[in-house]
Image 1 (cartoon, one colour):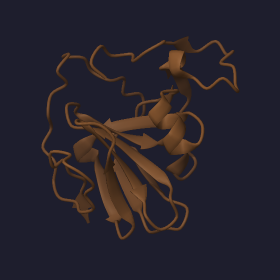
Image 2 (image 1 turned 135 degrees about the vertical axis):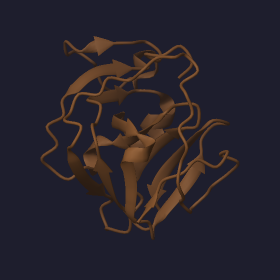
Image 3 (image 1 turned 90 degrees about the horizontal axis):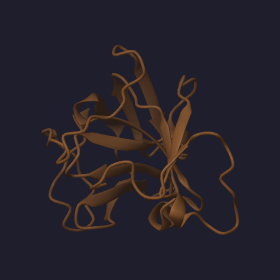
Image 4 (image 1 turned 180 degrees about the vertical axis):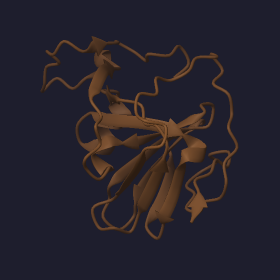
Length: 170
């Protein structure tokens, strides 16, 4: 098993090694809500990418940005974990796509599942919540980039709602 890594995001990458934490430029921290000793497993539809999380997960944030909608076919529902708490247990199908100068998205090249959102400037890596094996114990807590939401659906629940990011630089 190897820990997921950051490599500068200069194109698609498909290997893994140990990550070092990079502080969030805003100095903000993410909410960690689950038990620190929790263990979660997850992976893609075909099993070519599997991972283990040792530690707390943030509750789920729904992202309605155009990139998440194109990546997922609808909005993206992400939890997050500190980088050193995520270990790949099978990475045969893992590929990376650099969707911006600082962000890459991890997906399975065999079944097409979207699994990770990785911003090199943050201490966390986001995990597509639907890729976790149940039970997760997570709940959805907010929507972000609602100004970019598709015109074919409405966001009409009582969750926190941000027209852009919940962070100024994210």
